Image 1 (tube, rainbow, N blue to C red):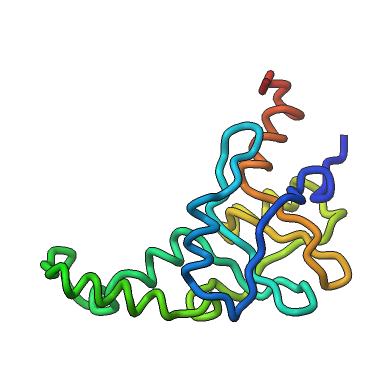
Image 2 (image 1 turned 135 degrees about the horizontal axis):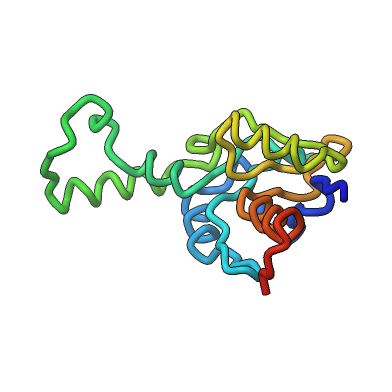
Length: 160
């Protein structure tokens, strides 16, 4: 059986725009959709006004940009007072999605074979791939979806 992105993509997903506040991204991921086999959304695709993917915001992006920048240059052990932490959080809340999103976006077209999707995800360490048709987002292939379909289809595992 030839499985393609169209066969395994999720069509029930959130999107953000580059101008959205970072707090909206935090809330959407926190309240993320739980799919039928138990995996929860940990990232959101960012689209422009035409619906074309321009970036991705993940839990990792949020945590990376929430922490103080000086941690890039100091040892892992440090002490911050509550007031300092609050200042960093307040500063973070002022950011837009565009300022924290990962970009550029790797994507696939709907008729790309599952093995090609696996190859892209492994080589580029992608956990999700937007599915784009005519420059518009039509779905998202998540690593967990790929694994689910791999187990169900190629290894005949009873998932239910």
